[in-house]
Image 1 (cartoon, rainbow, N blue to C red):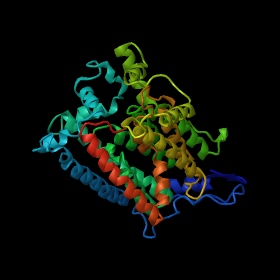
Image 2: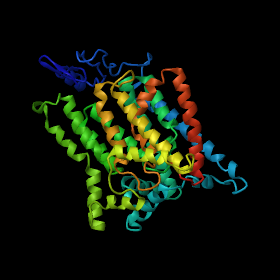
Image 3: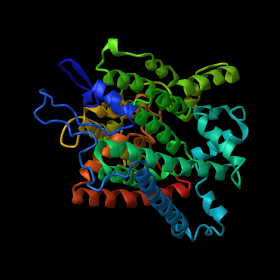
Image 4: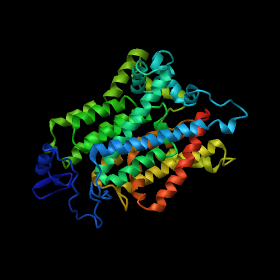
Length: 436
């Protein structure tokens, strides 16, 4: 957002012109206006790195999202099919499709299935897991052949496709079709990308959160708020979209109080899922914050400054008696991921691969999201456990990586490193070993 003279700008064009264009159905992003406070201008939104053949709009996103999604599914199926080979002397090979699928019934999946089948009263420890995904699993279980676990996989797989499509559409409008294709491929190829297909709530949350961010960009405020409300009923991080909503609304209006309209009130709907779950916890357990108390069962209690967490984990690695023990490997991976995400978010705002100032709201959400596990680390030997899974939610990180991927050497190196590691992580996961 910039302003100059008598015409305030929205998305790089005068507000009056922008309003006419939106009303006419023209949503093509315009370039940033010239600025005097930077010797290197931001890359023009919607034109940088754009494929000369065009993106194909939603149809292009649906098609390329489909091929990427099918490729990811095929990779997971193939790795799962051979996952028994290193252990053939210890266990029998799966003989049926059901036995193959059972290899994915691991860890958090068990809790989501229990909640879908029996609710939170069955085991109050499950209150740490937010309700929207189990509710969808419960509904799908009535339609999908098989048990609740199969329904959980179906919901996750379908929402993974939805997430890839909306991320492609958002990135295409900002950076063009070529970068959009790499972004969703890099996301799914990331070492923990298989969690978008596993029976976890990752893909549902990503689809809802990015859908809300996309609607904010297009100024469809009511739909952005509805999707944010659903995201906050999926993960606690979804409530952060309320802050992003207000920031992006004000940014598009030059942070001018005189230009605020009643549609800002939609922001109140953004944390609706969290509020509804707190109300349920108050009715059921007598404590509206019972979901937070339940985190203590999983060793996530209390708060620390983010830099304190990073320093503590670094000290744990430095003073470890055995550097390459499983615990220290997890610490190294998660600490490295945290530092890499923070560095890439900085590059999203400044430098050669920046996304442009109009995308600062995306970086704001990603930064707050990745800060949550830093603020509330696990009180265990690996405080940042699962952080490299949470990194999947930081879409600007993958946009920056995709811009870097214009360099063929970087593209090859990223894929050669990410894909084999993901294969090992899938093998570890289906053998019921802890990954994150």
